[in-house]
Image (cartoon, rainbow, N blue to C red; front, top):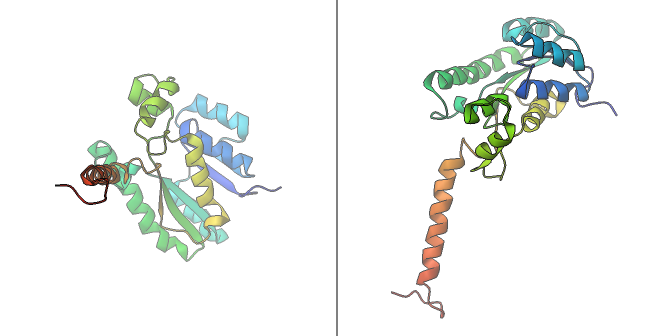
Length: 223
């Protein structure tokens, strides 16, 4: 069976590891040809050697020039949950990720007339080498990172590279043919709405327990 993006050509930046590498491998498995770009030359060459060719990144501006001529294309930018909600990262990081969201939503209507869709993906806490380094001080300690990141996750586990790659695949495929200017949050409800919703559900549960204690066996509320 042909893949979901059979014959497509994808330029993936940061493809030498983590989410970028996972996405590149998933895209190739779904029939795409991938251009892998990364400042980590050796790691990038390794991934490219295993899945396909190595080239340079075009960026939104230059990718759009090519896509305009062909009358179609998909541009996907990577932001973060810090790009849609403050307080999830340092100020500079938050500002940069908000800028990615703004650029995505500014460019989407401009390029839509050329048949080009522009969306952003906003991963939450995802277990990668970078996450492991931040949480444990050791980029190779994925096991401990998974435990730490997943400790309070509503779904009972942290995000995996495959979770993000699947979301990217959706936005790149014809399944998302009418989706443009969107920011797809992939965080298992852990960050963007998680703690706020958690405060409400915890409060709600405590109220239910209190009401239960006040109810007499006959159903009347005791004083």
